[in-house]
Length: 89
Image (tube, rainbow, N blue to C red; front, side):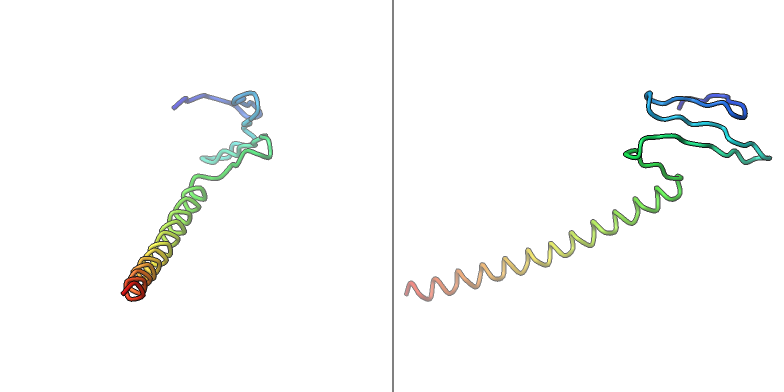
C-alpha cells in the first residue's frame, strides 16, 4: 500500500484519469473529493463489500436453480431413453 501525506486542498492523480483531493479535515474525519471518468465505479468499502456479498448470494441462487434444471433434464432424458427402448421392442 502506498501511503501519502496531503494537506487541505492538496490532491493526488491516479493513472492520469483520477484525482483524489483532500476537501476538508475536521477532527478525525477527512473529506475526499474524487474526480474520475463516469466509467470508473467508486464505492465506500462497506458498500462495496455489501454489493459483493449480495452478488455472491445471487450467483449461489442461480447455481441452485441450474442444478434443479439439470436434474429435471437428466430425468427427462432418462424417461426418453426408456420410451425409446420400449418403442424399439
